[in-house]
Image 1 (cartoon, helix red, strand yellow):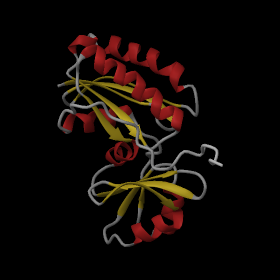
Image 2 (cartoon, rainbow, N blue to C red):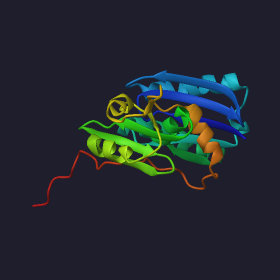
Image 3 (cartoon, one colour):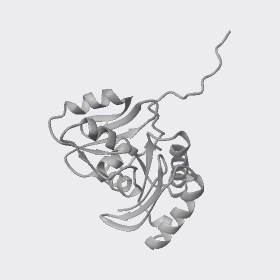
Length: 208
């Protein structure tokens, strides 16, 4: 199965082209902003390196969040456009699941700084993506008997509070692992939607 995957949802922009287990092309660059300008050239370069034409792709993959409002929408809009143009399935993967997959086997917790003393947390197979305050995440992970491998920007702070935990070097999602997870899932018949774990900050004025 050939697949193009992208991630723009958090602090990096990445693209991967896979053919089964083979990585045909991979681009990864950490960035706080500028995802919209970087994505298309990175996709073009990766597709050129892979030797595939867009019509050769069997499936597409993209991160759906949690992430920044703009970052999530950049990747989703781009890949939803390709989904329509190519008539190919587009599978959505959470940023946290992608980081957890990259961090290794065993019990892995992807824990990412969500600001306001909160974190995004996912423990694949045990807890789906959620937002909570840091102390609640400490309590939740402390109840897991097995050693926990930690990924994400809040992982170092969590390791300091979680005896026996293992700190991985994964801090951002990578399209390489988005692609691998998207390959393993059943093809999606619907276009993925952005995953927002918080209500928007902007509110409509109260009705008088």
